[in-house]
Length: 223
Image 1 (cartoon, rainbow, N blue to C red):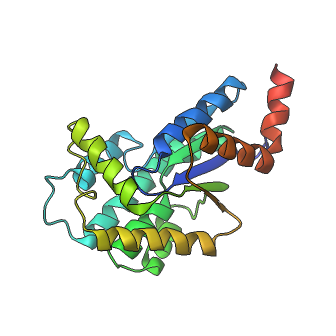
Image 2: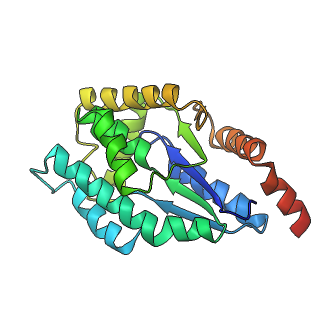
């Protein structure tokens, strides 16, 4: 890898699109190549972030205004970058993050109808304008993804169901938001069509190895 900094990869998509599964598989593959990987998530990637996450995602949280929600998302992200992401990149690690600012733009900018520009402005001011080197957008059928996320929360008795309780119009706006972001950020975002876990995993690894051949080269050297 470059001597300047590590690599930053984010995963995006609707809840229930399979992000957690694919992040775990990619992290396992890269770690097996003797690469140093930090797999993390937003919100909740730091100790302070976990407390913010409990407010943001708890289905018992009522009356949280869209602007307060947006502010909390960026409070979590600013702390996450300062405490974990930036130091890991400085140490030349590979950071794999489950959600980043694209999710905030999709969910708060489009879903909550606050607009994209306020999200991008806050990112520039609060997040050192740090963007991933690669973003993998896992595509999925809207209704099926929401249903999987709701079933997952119910089966695990999780209280993290505040967003899943939103109506269909909200999720249509979020889905449209991801589509628009992907069309705008064509150099950074790669869309991954839905498929079997193994098929999606193979697509992701192929894209990562194609974009960052140094990872394969380093793995060959360390074996």
